[in-house]
Image: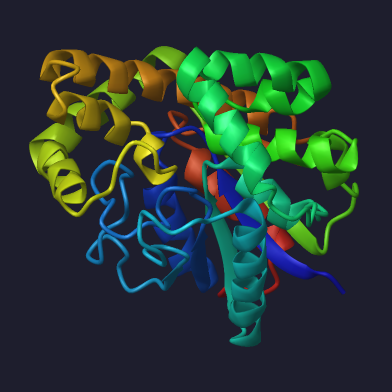
Length: 309
């Protein structure tokens, strides 16, 4: 029998964290983060990382596991997440994969066969120089020529993943997108997607960014900068961090940085929704519906034999 897993996804600021805690309490669950930036230590405010108090005693995994300058890949995440799912099942509890990074979550649930292609440092340096000299859009255009499916999924600022996809194509002659999906899954997954009307979501995103500033986002990024972390790192390309880094370097005013964070977050939410809407197994719920939580509980109870009576 396949192991059961609850997958809770949705755009940034839609309310995944609060709902995941309630579901974990109801179904004796443990939460495995499906967020590519919450793995980094010291990046708390800008990633909306759940606090120990908010965890309410529910075990959380794959949060704060590496420093911001440590390389981290989808392959590594896939391995760690599957290990955690097995561990949680071993304790007789319900693993809940919760987050908004579509590629990471799908790599675990949809049995992606991640390509094990050795790094080609010479090619990577060449592509990095190309991006530095002529802009990220040049890399994105090159990727679009050889692998339009992957290019569609990656933001032009995601240079690390664009370089990796180009590297895989260079070494294997096969687009990265064709090397991944097996079309099977090692799990019996219950997919739950959260959504709300766009204007309400965008308003929540804007207010969340304002709250991050109040909570000390600038000071958090300043501490990271003082430790030697810089914009060349994947971690520092996260929304909120790259803009404040540019502000601290004198390239943006604070007002400009905040505007770009809000704009970037709204665009990211749109991309997240586009990604998750491709998933056929998804059960969508509008969180502004008062009956939403009861309906979700009913769905999960029907698919999870570990539910408490």
